Amino acid sequence: MSKFKSTKSFYGFPCTHRQWKAESHCRFVHGYSRSFHFEFEAKDLTQEMWVMDFGGLKDVKAWLDEMFDHTFLVSQDDPYMETFKKLDTEGVIQMRILPNAGMEGTAEYVYQKVNKMVGDKTDGRVWVTRVEVRENEKNSAIFIA
Image 1: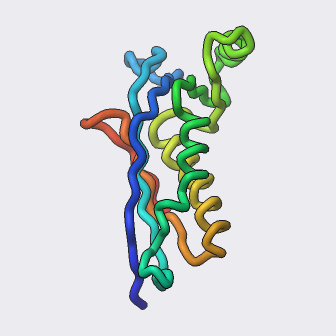
Image 2 (image 1 turned 30 degrees about the vertical axis):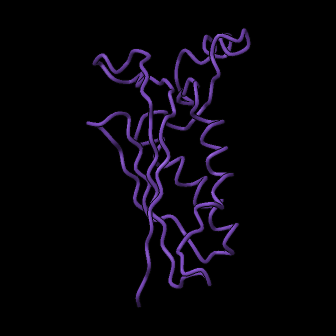
């Protein structure tokens, strides 16, 4: 069975995280300007001959902005959670809690959210097959559905 694919990228999401379980310098709070790259798939094209109407992804962009623009990502099991909550309450950081705030965990988290958004808006005609999250030009993590 033939399938069609298309891709869409979003750039410029400056946020921080830490890998608290790491013994390396990655355990320290550090940040990047992340980018998100999506691969969409469909069995059939729209009447406009598209897999995905990219103009219809404004809600995805808004969600990415809310989650990753000048935010502090914290893994839900970080032992300094209460400290970070205090900083958030005091307006020092904009905390976002994820199951795993690292790049791989972020890729999976974003996949789950955006795949549902895309599926809902296309009545299941389009789905996300791949999410790549880049922290810089050298490093990325990929979640493949």
